[in-house]
Amino acid sequence: MRRLITAAGAVAAVAGCVTGLLFLGPDTSRPSATAPPAGAADKDTGSVDTIRRRTAAYPDDPAAWADLAHTEIERARTTFDAGLLETADKALRRSLALDGTDNYRAVTGLGLLANARHDFGEGRGHGLHATRMAPDRPDGYAVLADAEIQLGNYPQAREAVQRMLDIAPATAAYSRAAYDLETGGRPEDAAIALQRAVDSAVTQDERAFAEARLGDLAWSQGRADRAARHYGRALSAVPAHPYGQAGLARVAAARGHTGKALELYARLVERMPLPQFLLESLDLRRASGDSHRGTERAVLAAQVRMARADGGPVDPHLILYAADHGDPKVAVELARREWKHVRSVIVADALAWSLHRAGRDTEALGYARRAAATGWKNALFRYHRGTIEQSLGMPEGPRRLSEAQALNPHFSLYRPDADG
Image 1 (spheres, rainbow, N blue to C red):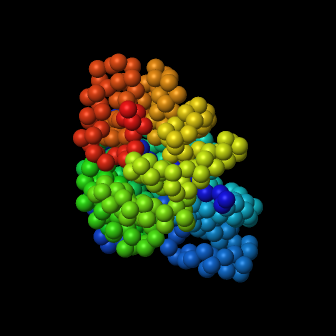
Image 2: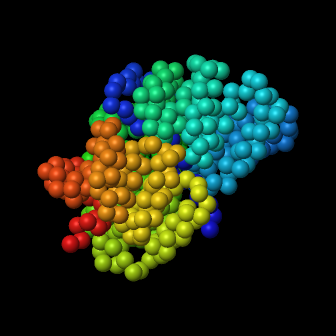
Image 3: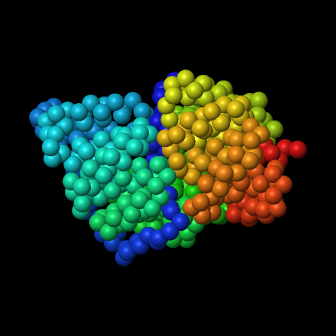
């Protein structure tokens, strides 16, 4: 099985904190800003083949090797192929061997690489180093923001995002700001930031990513038709965009077109068997009474075994699979391991739900509250917390379950605690 990079390590995501407000500033996205997206290869470096030719022609050029590393990390982000990170690592080592004193591009590359590998403490260190080297360049703040949020340092993450917005209000900054605003309970402002991300996109990949995120945002608010439009635009920009395809499958399921949804999922997981897509497909099969068909369960079970054996990063969707469809005790084991390295609200929610499914509701409630600390209007989080509270006989439980349904009636196709 080809080793896939986890979604958390592939997609830059900055969550919000409970104090302070991001200031987006004026819309400077038209015409497109000259600064490239932080964390992506510079526009003038061209394709990976072009950059490889540069390293062959100029093997003693540290900038060429650093550019190659950035490009391979970006390819890993879009293809989820973790093997590309090894190529990036070697390129960064070569770049630093040639220039180890004033190599900003390599330092930010080290940060991106560490974050992609879920070594967020190291990523934070490289981000801080880069921002000290060049306080007026955005890439270091991007690395820092991505690391801080995964470490649960929400105020510091927000400060880094704000600095990006001040320096270079382009796609990378707007995308991170949107995630901050959404997880901070401000979906309308998040939509504004994402639209600016679309408008300032330099590449089709950037446009597709921002459109898919707009689709996810609309979906989270129960607006399936609006979500479908954005997912369609993502696929227009990049025809095989995985999150655009998954989004349309989700919408098809919500509209009652189960066969179409399963067909879309089948095509998607065949080429990109990420836990999120596999779990959504399995949930749909189980909700429709067709859980014994398909290969999703077998693939997810194999991924759980691999995660337990290798001790590496754990995708939160894999934890939820183990909690709902496998062994809840294994889910708790994986969630606790991930929590040691990643203190995001997403991991807090996964740990809370795993503990609940393992019959440990009192302990689960503490993590459910941590998941809610940013104010994210997340229906799944509300459902998980409400179920835990209801199991504990707390009066808030039924109210929170109603809130989850009101936020997004289609937030989950399979709810195991509702079986009885």
